[in-house]
Structure formats: C-alpha cells, structure tokens
Amino acid sequence: MTKKKIILLIYVLIVLTGCATTNNLTPKSHTNSVYPQSDSSEKSILSIKSALHNDEENLDLYLLLGKEYMRQSNFTDAINTFTIILSTDPEAYEAYNYRGEAQYSLGNFDQALDDFDMSLNINPYYSKAYYNRAIYYDDINNSKLALGDLDNAIKYNEKNFLAYEMRGKIKQRYKLHAEAIQDFDFSISLKPNNVTALYYRSLSYHQLNRLHNALDDLNQVLNYDPSLVPALFIRADVLKNLNKIEDAIIDYEKILSKQRNNARAKKELIKIKRVRRP
Image 1: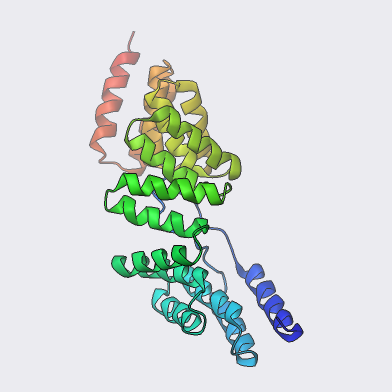
Image 2 (image 1 turned 60 degrees about the horizontal axis):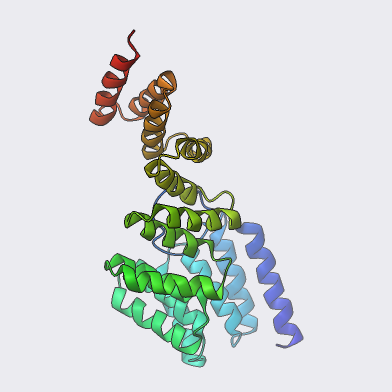
C-alpha cells in the first residue's frame, strides 16, 4: 500500500472511530453480526467517499464503506459496494462474507449461503463466515451442521464470543445444560457485559436447580435493563423457590407495572400471595 493510501485509510478510521457507539444487548438470538449504529453515519459515509474520490482503487476503503452501510441497515448499497470489491478481487473472502450478511438481512437466504460458502472456499480458516453460516443452518433447523460450523468458528478464533454463545443456546435447546453453561462461561469470559449469554446461562442454571447461580446472573441482566420481562419472570420463580416470597412478589408487580394485562403475572401473583399468608 502506498504512503498516500495509508494516510487516507488512517484518516477514515479516525473519523469512524470517533462516530461509532455500541449497541444495547438484549437477551435474544443474534440473527447476524452486531453492527453498532453511528451517531453521525452520514458524516462517516461522506468521509469514506471523499477518500475514495482521491483513491478510487483502494479496496480497503470500499470494504469500510460497505460495513458502514451495514451499520445504517442500508443493505442494498452494502451489497453493491461489496460486489464492486469482488469484481476487482474475486478472492476477497471478507467481502463475500459481509455481502452474505447483507443478503441474509434482506431475506435473500440462498444468495447469503452462496456467499458464505465462497468465503470459506477461499479461506477455510475464516471464523466469521463459519459463524454466519451456522446462523443459516440453525434457522433451517439443521442443528448438526450449525454445531459443526460453530465448532470451526471457535477452532479458528478462540475469541469468537458470539460463536460460544450460539453453541450454548443450541445445546440448551437439547437440554445439555452443563455443556451449555460451559459455552456461556467462555462467552462471558471474553465479553463480561454479554447480557445475552448471562440471561441464557441463568436459564440453564435454573433447569439444573442451581438457583443461587441463576439469581446472580439474573441480577446482572436486570441491573443492565430492569424492563426485561422474561428475566423478571425467571427471577421471580427463582426467588420463590429460594423462599424469598416478598422479593418474588416485587418482581411480579414490576411485570404488571409494565404489562398491566399480563395474565401469567396476575395468576402467579395471586398464587404467591396465598403462599405468603400465615
């Protein structure tokens, strides 16, 4: 890379770093890689385009541009940008992977799978593409292929916390709770504020009757976001089983303060208040 290209790329990276903010995590499945929203996304796009105006053949800048479109959920322009890269460099495995993510986000699942396959044909050690293809397989209920890809995603990048988390959720689905907890442990060790992994780990702890462990995880989740009704339900049940009746009542009342017509919360609150009576 020439000195001019390096300077342009550094400039754009500085602009993007100053604009990016992190996304709030919630206990739900990751349907794709996380792309934080930018506070000044238009400024980022303009900065990259300005750099490209001075260096139209810089594929690294096109890759940054495509990823910035992804942050804006502008998947059509992202696909077009990654396609420009691939028309120049058919071996650009990252562009195939990111284009696959964009295709998947638009519901173009067959095209997405083709792109993930191409990415891995070029670079069979690319963790991100294994993870993304695992999402595809999991969505079509092929857990065996999904787990195989997640194993490879972790094999080629032991710091892929999303792969550990997803593998844990699949194992949890098959009631392999002890193994699931191990995967959630790895995910959380790599990303301590991974609220999603904490939530799902609490479910496995709950199933194994490790109530104090479940409570610790749920307290962290609800400290992060007190409005998560599924976590409040699980914590209320854990508290009830720990004979902390008053605390369980508080959680059911919190649920009803957010969802006044929640029939399940009403029913549980009536039942637990009967238990409380002398």
